[in-house]
Structures are given as structure tokens and as C-alpha cells.
Amino acid sequence: MPKIAEYVKLETRRTLRDPGFVIFSAGMPVLMYLLFTNLGGAGQVDGWKAMSMVGMAAYGALGAAMSVGTGIAEDRTLGWLRQLRITPMSPRQVVVGRALTGSVTVLPAILSVLVAGGLVNGVRLDLWQWAALTLLLWAGATPFTLLGIGNGYRLTAQATGVVNVATLMGLAVVGGLWFPIDAFPDWLRSVSRFTPANRFADLGWSVTHGAAPGLTTVAVVLGWLGIFGSYAVVSYRRAGRTA
Amino acid sequence: MSALAADGMRHRDICHRRVRTCASAGALRPLHSVIRMTQTQTTGSESAAVSFAGAAKAFGAVRAVDGIDLGIRRGETVALLGRNGAGKSTAISLMLGLNDPDAGRVRIFGRAPGQAVAAGLVGAMLQDGRPIPRVTVRELVTFVARTYPRPLPVAEALELAGLTEPADRRGDRLSGGQVQRLRFAVALAGNPELIVLDEPTAALDVEARHAFWKSMRAYASRGNTVLFSTHYLEEADSNADRIVVVDHGRIVADGSGERIKRSVGSSLVAFDLAGGDGEGLGLLPGVVSVEIRGDRARLRTADSDATVVALAGLGAIRGLEVTPATLEDAFLALTDSRDRAKETM
Image 1: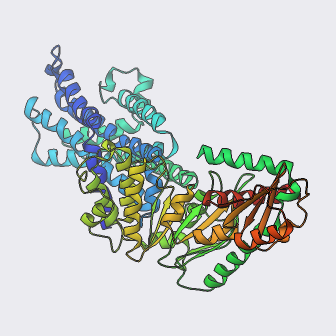
Image 2: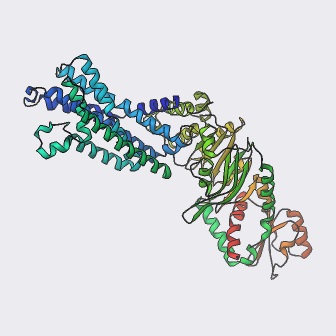
Image 3: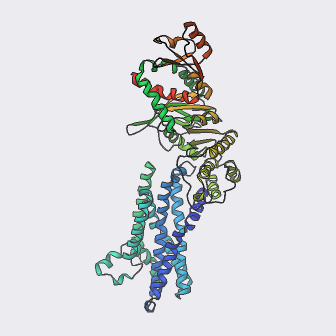
């Protein structure tokens, strides 16, 4: 276990020192949140400031979680994964360490948007709501970390970057993280309700409404956790044979 | 390196023309006895740091490692010497458990390589590894050290590798020589009993190379077992107790630099045949191989005095020249012998 802790420490440092990571996972969501909620009277719409806060925090967390995969692909290119294989750390510990790193590096993304919501946009929630919101967004990002890990073990560094960004944008738009899905056509709205990003954000939206997340929401999120988890395991095993 | 390869080509060209003289079995005889000797030394010894028994590994149709028997005792510093593609890196990947042998067995301190690695007995410097970005030298070495059960103090590891000065610089902002030293520090940080270095000085300038070997010898002198691969004979000779020459996935010679020189003849005796056919030259005292280029005979001999006296007795001393064989000569003679054997088959 201490070995994994050391690894998480190393990887967390490396990730948080990446200006690109900080800008795209924390800076961008905050900027977009403030723009989307303050331009053209958008802020007057009831509840939009809180709703967009959750959406943008989820968007930031999603991007941060998936970028774990970019690091893995980079490590394969550098030969660092191979080097790790000849330390006493087992490949399984490396993968678990990476996933745990993801759970640390999503926090700045989530917290920065929530802080902007509370301090700049004056979103008012009970203390338990803030706590539950943070916790749910933090835990709910896990499927996306696994998706990123799956990409990282399967694709080249360049391809991982492209695929991650495309996935992030697609999931964010279709999932209604940027704009409410109420504006979507009916069919898209029904599809959206089963996409991972939408249900992920819904964990947070239900809290801002003072309710516990719905059963279907939790079930859909767990379903995606299973799918992305299997994808990560399969990719990792395949890479283990070749890397 | 390319010069060496080119030399090898030239040498073989001569052999194509002169199969008769090149396929001298004499050059190989002493080597077999060397190999047999090391086998008896290591067979059944539990304490062997590294042991290969009939290990083979093929990638597609390429038999990268083609039946290797090798034993390395604890505390030895061994050079794995061979040309590019000779099978050195594959042998190393078997040793580290990065690949499994198709046949035969590889053991590190009596355990399967993967287990030895998991137990922290092995450290390695692989080819082409680059440090991960945005992490300092000290942070990286500290991390690696802490994955091992009994690591070196980080300051000591950095000092041994000559990295005290750039310790707080990021890994992606180091010079080529410093990167190499960082990879060395990563290999030794855990204080492993066996350290494996795959072409550690490739792409280093002379000065950096010199500094590197100094560090390596300092680590070896602490009683650790060191195995490094190189295609520079000079490096192998001046930094290893023992040289294992690998070619086409097999061991073609095994012994000290001295011994390898001796086994292919320590001197070259050349003279003009002056119309003679060179018959029976291989039977003269000390001669291990005979090569005839045009009208000139070149004898590799283990005892140049005896050979010259015998030649004098035959009156074959026109243009006589005696030169000490360089290690480079020895290397070429060794690694070419298999090609020749194939050609005569």
C-alpha cells in the first residue's frame, strides 16, 4: 500500500504541474461557467446558476478524470511503464495507483467551479448540500477515469489525446453539461438521459434540488462504471502482452 | 560502430573467397573449453545471481536468443558483448521477466525473474527510457527507492550516479548525459543485488562515458552483481571481470578479456608465401587459425615465439611481421566464426 501511495504522490505532482491540465480541467470550466451564467441576462433564469455550476463542475471533473489516460499513453511512449515493470511495484498496483491519482486530480476541477458558484455567482446551498455535491461529483467521476485508462493503454499518446478530447466534448454536449437538455429535440433528450455524463451530473443536480439521486440515475452510472471498468481491464491486459 | 560493422563485412568478404582457410576449427576449440568450465562452475549453484539453461526466445521467424547457457555468480561484473541485433536486449528482457523464454529456463537468485523483480532484487536501466516530465530528479529517485524493501538513501544514490548537482532539476530538462545518469540512479536506487544495464553508454560522449563507468564500478565494488550490454569491446574489457560474447542469439565466447584474446590468438604473424600453398600451417605450434590473402598468410597464434621459430625452420620468413592482436580482432574472429561455419555447411 505505501508503494501505491508513493506512486499516487508522484503522479499527482506530475499532473498538477502541467499547465495544460490546470487550464483545461479547472480554468476552462470556471471561465465557461462564469460566461454562460452572466452573459445576456442568462443569470436571471431561475436556478440556472446552480444548474450550470453542477454541469461545469462535472465537465471539469470529466476532463480531469479522462486525462489520466493521456498520462498512461505518454508513459508507454517514454518507456516508463516498462521501467515500472522492473520495480517491485506490480502492474496491478500501477493501474490502481493511476486510478487513485485520477480521484485526486479531479478535485481541483470540481472545487474551483463550486467555489466560483458560491463566491462569485452567489449560489446558496445548505452545508450538507455542498458536501454531498462535492462527494457525489468526486465519486461519480470514477467511470471516466476508467474510460481514460482504457484509452491510454490501448491507443498511442497522440490518439489518446484526440479521442479523449472528442469524447469529452461529445459527452459534455449530449449530456447537457453546457446547455440544459430541455432545449434538445425529444429523441435526443431521451437518449441523453442514458449517457454517462448526463447521469453523472444528475447526481449533483438532484442534490441542488434537495433530493437524493434517483435510483435509475445511480443504476445508469453504475452500469457505465461496469462498462468502462471492463474496457480498462481489457485494454490493460492487452497492453501487458505487448508493452 | 558502423566502422566496426564495416570491418566485419570486409572480413566476411575475404572469407567468402577463402572458405577453405577461413573455416578453421582451431579458432573455436579453446572457446568450447572456456564455456564448459563456466557451466560446471555454476550448475546447481543456488547462489548464482543469474542462470540461463537452454533459454531461447523467438520473435516470429527471428530466433533472437537461440539456446543460451550462462551462469553469473554473485558479485561478478559481466559484459554482454555483441553487435546490434545479436540478442543482447532479448537476453536482458528474459532476465528481467519482460519476456518469457519459449524454451529453457532463466533464474535470478534461484527464482523466476518476475519474482526476483517483485522481491526488489533487481534494478535495471533499459535502452531508450526517458524520464517522465515535470518531476524532479530527486522526486523520481525517491519514488523508485521507496518501491524497494531496502533502498539506498536517496542522497547516496544521487551521489553514486553523479546527480547531486541537478537533483532538483526536472527530468525533462536534463542534458543527454544527465538523463543517462538519472536512468542509472533509477536502476540502483533500490539497492538491488543485481543491476542490469542495457547499452548504458549508447549516445554518450567520451567524457560522460568515462564518468558513467566510474559510477558503475563504484556500485559494483560494493559487492553487487552487475551485468551490462555493450557493443564496444574496449568498454567490456576495461569495466567487466568477464566478457560474454553473443552473436546470432548464442554465446560464442565467455571469459576475461585476456582469455578471449588468447583463445583467438594473442598475436598475428604474417609472411609472404612466396609461391608456397600454405599447407600444414595450421599444425604449427601455437597457431589457432590461418588466413590467406593472395600471397600473404596471416596466422593467429597463442605463442608467437614458437610459431616464428617453426616458420624459420621452414624457411618461410619473407616479409615476416608479428603484431599483437587487438581485442577488436578477437571480437571479429569470434563473431565471424559462426558465419563461416554456416557457409561451409
